[in-house]
Image (tube, rainbow, N blue to C red; front, side):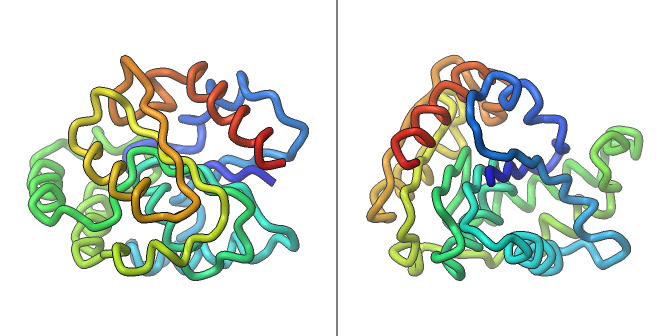
Length: 207
């Protein structure tokens, strides 16, 4: 089972173009993160627990592909449940949360109109609560616990996540890295065809 996890500000449909170009015989599911929480408090900790329960509901190891927040959730799960992950693909993902950037995002969210968040499934207050709850996340001392084949992907224009991507590649023993040209942070939106081709090769080499 291939599980795709979107980033904050995206939704399950953000993977549609990539999945359309992806040639695989495996089942595919794109998780819509707000649906996991339902009426719970919107914090990273609550979201991760629901994501963990979702993944553990399958009786076979999963192929996890996550972007940004989705990558953080996938990485967190792979560290804690390595036997339940067949492959891991992390796109534009941090290994330690940059508090300055998170604080800046929260400040920007505060001044955006509510309608700017209406298509995501989360409200403005949800965005602020979620980003604030992520400030202390740090996976750097546990990256060696990831034992499955791992692919790190970063857009060539994703300046904010390049350093973290290289750190992940160097710190996870099983990791390799690909840079996708002419793509920013949202690789699944900017270069879905290139991303699908890279993912197909990765899945095939680890079938």
